[in-house]
Image 1 (cartoon, rainbow, N blue to C red):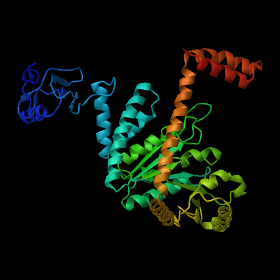
Image 2 (spheres, rainbow, N blue to C red; image 1 turned 60 degrees about the horizontal axis):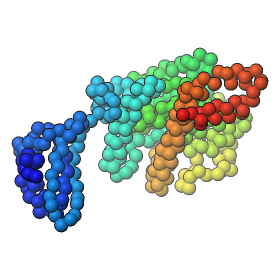
Image 3 (cartoon, rainbow, N blue to C red; image 1 turned 180 degrees about the horizontal axis):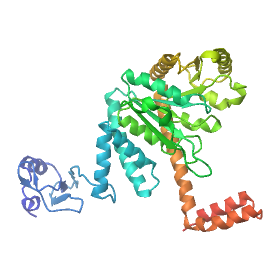
Image 4 (tube, one colour; image 1 turned 90 degrees about the vertical axis):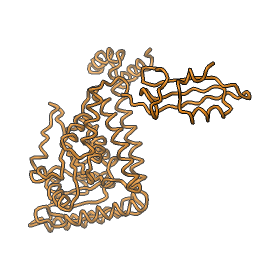
Length: 420
């Protein structure tokens, strides 16, 4: 077999190296361009992916080896059109360049429930994730952004605090992103999404980005895509991410699984505070801030502060290096706002030095993965043809009392398991 005929003039130094080696079979794949190196043509096409292949045989001492050279081939993800690929590339490029419009469009994409758009969103997220990992490597392994969760009962002053606090941070040169989660109506399914109306000054700040999102009935007061939105904001260059959640209750644990620090805002003179606020949410707090500590409410605020200082001493510590603090703040007078940031910086430095912050983020990644699995499995269960046909009938029997809910659930699960 004529080697030069098969190779169609490969680079001479490459061919000499192959002839010296004790190879019997070589399989080379080249890029789809018409020439290699300095005007050397390739062999014929191998497949539709744009790769080229050349094969030849060399007799040797009985050893049989295969050598495969393959260049990087740019190809679209499975089934994506050129238009879709350009759309994802445009969003990614604009996002990492800090364009707010691209960030807004990217978050809208990940919030979509359309199957095709969800696939595009995952491609975009993967590109952003690779970019963030590279930036973290250049930053000596330290996280690029500080994630803070804010929670508190309605009327605690969360939006007022965020506006005052956010303006202070942007004046100090930080870029702030606020992901404000609004509760969706159980009746109509709608949301007001009115957080920007309560943060008028901050919403006009070019170094701040406020994004209200509906919960769509998600347990825990955080949206299905809050984790993805955090990643996109970090990719857009925002170094402080605030997640404002809905209310206070046992279901608020969800936010603690996606932030570095959890801050609880409480108003003074709210009645029996230790009874009214669930113990579980107190245990999750890294910092408790008593709001509206001004005017006639200074005395009640001091009393509440003393109560929570005593209460936190009785709770089990979640961190080996950080003990939760209780401070008083007032967004009206500005008292304690700088103290909040000082405590946040202290928390970040201590947790980074001990390695707990990195370990916490790694655990959160696993929780995030399993949450997505549960959500997707439930959606797959509901949309399965056999199950979908039986759901109305079994629901009707449960409503009439002729079938227990547990037995109905077992029947649906059996139908799902026995699918072909």
